[in-house]
Length: 340
Image (cartoon, rainbow, N blue to C red; front, side):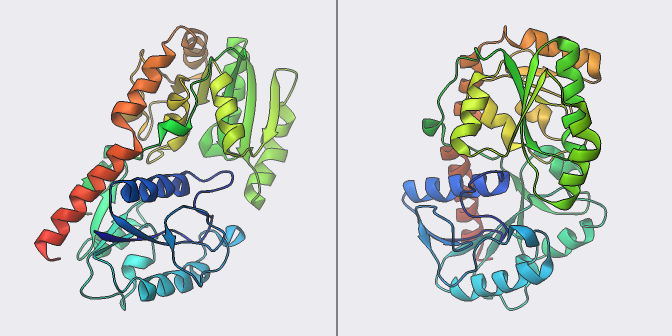
């Protein structure tokens, strides 16, 4: 197939630092191409994904993230340039609502955000003529009235991820500085468990900076090390040396790519049972699910006893980029056969 992929305009594909959605799009594009498909990627101009990339797009607009006035010109150009493909896979919010997209090319859209009450009518409208994909069963279940065509989990190319020994003597938190991500809770859990904590997190937007200075920075002490945002090599070195990834989510995250990145590194995950976490973590095998500081601290103390090869095997069998690409290709075939 000739497959057009539309990435959001916010970050390059792949991202140079934080960016779960962009990491997943990169893995999908590369894996679809490796499976013999032709992939045309509409993405920011500073992207380096090794597939055919369409020209004329602006560099990543990180400071405009979520702003419609940045997303719409990107979407309009993407649909104009993708006029000679069999199917378009859109990863934006505005794209499937664009009325001037080619009428004879079917569109599939992956929902990367939580389907909130405010967004539910938007996706209900989109699902009338676009096949919608959810990234977890939990995400799909939160959207009554929205027609979800398929649930396809994110995947990773594990060949590029080393399995770490986990001998660094620390737990790690990896994500962004925000109340929903649970960085304050991670500090409390690691202290209760008596285990050092390394924090690698995105902190560039105003609300992230404000939260760091007001709530996180005052808590940092001898037991914590704040690393800031790390690149891909730094991320996997950090994960590989950790006894566990601490992910005490305070919201129902639709997926949580960092959890399968940790497992691919051989590192168990200690998390709250929210969002997609129960779909990713095999409790007692590849990590522990728990609620409250005391329960999570006890789980963190036990995490070093879990098998790191079991963590890696879970990703290779359930969350590989090859499997993700195959499931997408099967769906694309179905949609094309229906003539939608």
